[in-house]
Each structure stands twice: as structure tokens, then as C-alpha cells.
Length: 320
Ligand SMILES: Cc1cc2nc3c(=O)[nH]c(=O)nc-3n(C[C@H](O)[C@H](O)[C@H](O)COP(=O)(O)O)c2cc1C
Image (cartoon, rainbow, N blue to C red; front, side):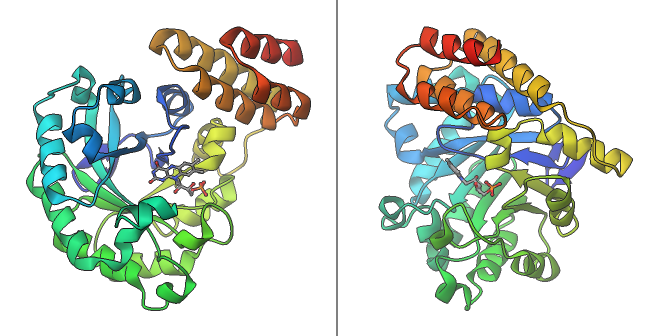
């Protein structure tokens, strides 16, 4: 067990929240491979507040999970957390084990509304939002932050300021994606800045960014309490099995990539039937799994597929 404040997770590896990708199928598959915890994709508190029916489809909360919110409004956070506490609106809310606030989304439409990474230079508002998180639920609460908006902003170390506010307002832990918003999802991760938080702010820390194998996972875990994997978890959910093996035995496990990809596909289709997962999700996950095998034509064909039968046909056709 790993303790992140009041949240206990089975293993120190977490599946990142990712819009469109971190659906129940991927989350369950990663947990089957050894991930200790997972988050939903970001969900606007405004969607909760207006009880948007479409939200019910997005809330695939069939297993214990962290709910990630996108918000710039303390009153909306309060209302949302009341709904979560009361299991109101949607039965699956009983499976929410912690609530996270997104301070990392880098898209300009989001940022210009003081949402996501747009909050990183709004310390007063951030304090209000963290306070609303902490005071309106008994569940563990956390925030996922980036280091800064861009390289210039990073010089003033906003990550230390935000981490300190999280500590002062009693958040259970923070996750730090070691890039600026301007870097989006690629490029160098600043491990020194993550370590600076570790050394200066007394709050449980989950480190995230460019964990692609055992060595990058080990480096990140040496400066944090747990690590979070994003894009590599989408492509190769078996990275969690590799990490687990490496930390137990100190050597890398041999991976039969074809066998693992076949397992991922088979399991994901099983979850499609169990949880009625939508077509777009199935398509993008199959494309991601096939990347491991370099099957470019099949990946292209999937782009043009229009039905679940098409997808099954293409996948079965290329794997035999
Ligand atoms: C397609 C995509 C969607 C994402 N959606 C979210 C999201 O909803 N909430 C969030 O906090 N981060 C989101 N992220 C960021 C990831 O959680 C993670 O921080 C980032 O990908 C860095 O980790 P990685 O280098 O292991 O991919 C998203 C990333 C990608 C690639």
C-alpha cells in the first residue's frame, strides 16, 4: 500500500487522466496489469451543476476511481462535491474514491477562462478553489499541476507557490506534470523542478511526464511517492507489469509484444461488451495498441472505419 495523504493506493503507479483515452476500458486494463490507481478524464463542474444528461454517458464510473474536475468556480465545486457525496444524479458516483482539480490543461480555450493551466498564475483563485475542494467533501482531494504556463513564467517558480497553497489548504497530495503548458505533451521534463517541490514542500507527491520504460519510471519514483503514466499507458498498458517486475526483481522482464497486444485487444473488446464503450473510444485504443507492432496500414484503415464491425474486422485481419 502507498499512502497519498488519506488515499491508499495498491501500487505506486497511476494511470493519468486523459480526455477521450482514460475510459473504463483503458483504466481497467491498466489496473489488471498492475496500476495502483486511475483517474477519469477532466470533467467540467458546470456539466455537473446543470445535470447535463450527456454527462451520464461520460461518467463511466464502474470501478473505484479518482474523479478529475475542471473548474474555476468555488461554488460549482461545492455543488459538484455535494452531488458526489450524496451519490446524487448518478449511481456510479459511489465509486469515486478521491477528487482531483485540473491545473494542467494547456488548450487556449480552456486557459483563457482561468481553467486548467490558466490557473497557474492565479494564486488567490487557486486558494479559493482548493479550499472549496477540502471543505465540501470527506473524500481525499488533490490537484494536478504543470510547472508553469511557459518558460518565462517558470522562472518565478509558480509550481512552488501552487504546491505550497495545496499544502496550506490541506490537500492530500499533488501530481506534478514536469512540463510547462507551452510544451503541451512532448519535450523535456524538468525533474529538477519536481525535486525542488519534493525538497521544499511537505506534501505527498505524484510525479508525471515522459515515463516510457523501467528506467524513466525508476528515476521519477526516486523523487516522488508515486508515478503517473500517460501516453505510454495508452499505447502499452503492459508498462505497469514491466514497472512492477522491475521494482520487484531489479531486472527488466522479457516482453512478448505481440502476445501483450493481443491480450490488450481481447480484454478491451471484453470491456466494450460489458460497459457498452462507445465506438470512437474503441477505434483510438485499437490504433494505439497496434502502434506497438508498427502496423501502419491497419492504423490508417482504422481511421476510416465507421462501425464496430469494421474495427473488429481490421484488427482480426492484421493479427490473424
Ligand atoms: C490526449 C491527452 C489527453 C489528456 N487529458 C488530460 C485530462 O483530461 N486531464 C489531465 O489532467 N491531463 C490530461 N492530459 C495530460 C496527461 O494526464 C499527462 O499529464 C501528460 O500526458 C504527461 O504524461 P506522459 O508524458 O506520461 O504522457 C492529457 C494528455 C493527453 C496526451
